[in-house]
Structures are given as structure tokens and as C-alpha cells.
Amino acid sequence: MTWLQAILLAILQGVTELFPVSSLGHAVVVPDLLNWPVDEHSDAFLPFLVVMHMGTALALLIYFWKDWLDFGLGVIGIGPRAAHERKLFFRVVVATIPAVLVALAFEKPIRELFASPLTASIFLAVNGLMLFAAERMKPATALKPIGEMSWRDSVVIGCFQCLALIPGLSRSGATMVGGYLTGLNHEDAARFSFLTGTPIIIAATVHEAPKLLKMEKASQALGASPTIDLSLSLVSGAVAGVVAFISIWILMRWFKNHEAKGFDPFAYYCMGFGAIATLINIVAP
Image 1 (tube, rainbow, N blue to C red):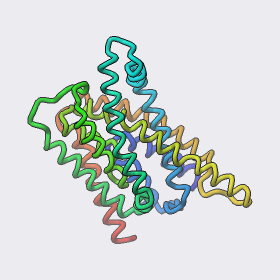
Image 2 (cartoon, one colour):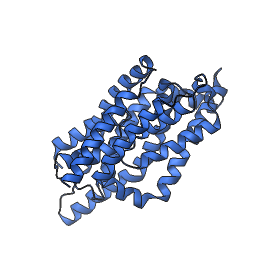
Image 3 (cartoon, rainbow, N blue to C red):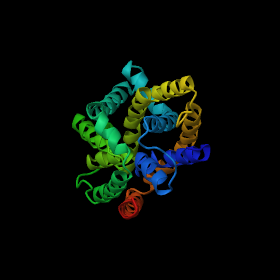
Image 4 (cartoon, rainbow, N blue to C red):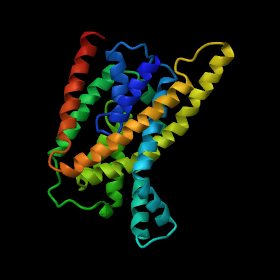
């Protein structure tokens, strides 16, 4: 992978990680469609993607810094809204647990799925269908504020987050859909999605990123060049973070001003791009 290709992937990552269109699906499909010499079966490919995800996690922490500060103060009982913030924080914790457990239990088959452009293309289209269907399954009851989420709501959103372990299904999209179907509006569903995504992304980085350093040291010991080196990954992560921050700003304002059918543009895009990519992979694998 060249520096130009890595930077372009980082920009793609920054845009697609927060938009409900699956960054991992794009990271697998786009290099394949463009015939880039990226070895998606390489042990270094998934850690490289995870480092870019770390950039987006930092962008989320910066954008939602007040939420995390309030959570911290709430946990130790400081402030007039301590009980409210503590309750919301533990809802976030509960929503992260299902995906962590499933990822640990099925790590090997999940890795194999990441290397399949055809699988990612198909599930990109499925992701679009999921967003399209959710928009038309709006709960009949009145929308509730994020502070009134129940433990059951958190578990439902956490189960939806497990879908993102399949490349092509968006983590942010799945959790937004889960939040929306439990009664949140688009903006609050997106906010809760991003709050639950931050610890998941950080945990994945802690688990995978050190492998890049080990690979680079091993390659240096053998006098060979690593397929994807650490410096390339770190710069790509920084670029992804900057682009991700801009993407969050755009997306939160989009949902604030488009409660009606807010998922539809992303649904149409995923269905169209996923269908085209699937056809190309079948006709010219």
C-alpha cells in the first residue's frame, strides 16, 4: 500500500465511520474495486484499520467531551444532574457489552469475513435496506428523550451493535436504528450511537494496534519491509480523526434538521453502491 492509497483510505474512513454507511465495508470493497495492491488477508490489514478507527474515536471524545465529563462527575456524585448522568453512563456501558462478548467469541470467523469484498458488498446493500426499513417502522408512540431510556433499550441497542461485526453493516447505522426503534429521535439515536461506539473502538484498538508494532519489529529483524508499517498507520489515523470530526459536525446537524426520513439518503446510497459492487464482484471476481 502506498502513502497516497493509505491517506485516501483514511479520508474514506473518516467520512464513513460516523455516517451510517459502514467504514469497514468500504475499506474492504473500495481497494478491491480499484485494484489496489492491498492484501486484505494480511495479518496487518485489520490492525491498520483499527488504528484509523482510533483516530475517529479521538474525534468522538473531543466532540462529545462534555458528555464524558458529565459522566465522570455523575459517577462520583458531583453536580445537580449527577444521578441523571450516572444513569445514562451505565446505559452506555450496558449497550457495549453484547458486541464485546460476540467479538471475543467469534474473532476468527469475523476476521475471515473482513477479507471478503463480495460479502462486504452484499451487506452494504443489506445495510441500506436496514436503514430504509427502520425509517418506515417508526414507533407509533411519542418519541422519548434520551434520559428516559430503559435498561431494555440499552440491551436492544447493544444487540444491534453486534451486527456491525459483519463488514458492510454499519456500527453507527445499526445502533442508530436500534435507538430509533426503541423510541429515540434521529439526533438522540445518533448521539447514543456515538457514545456507545467510543469505548468499543478504543477497546478494539488496544487489542489490535500492538500487533502492528510487533510486525514492524519482526520485519526489521529479518531485514524486510512490513506490508503496512506503523508510521503509515499513525498518519492515516490522524487524517481519519480530522475528517471524522468534520463528519460528526455535519451528521449531527443533518439529523437535527431532518427528523423526517433522516436515514433515507444513506439508505439509497448503500443499496445502490452495494448492489453495483456486488454485481462487479460476481461478474469480474
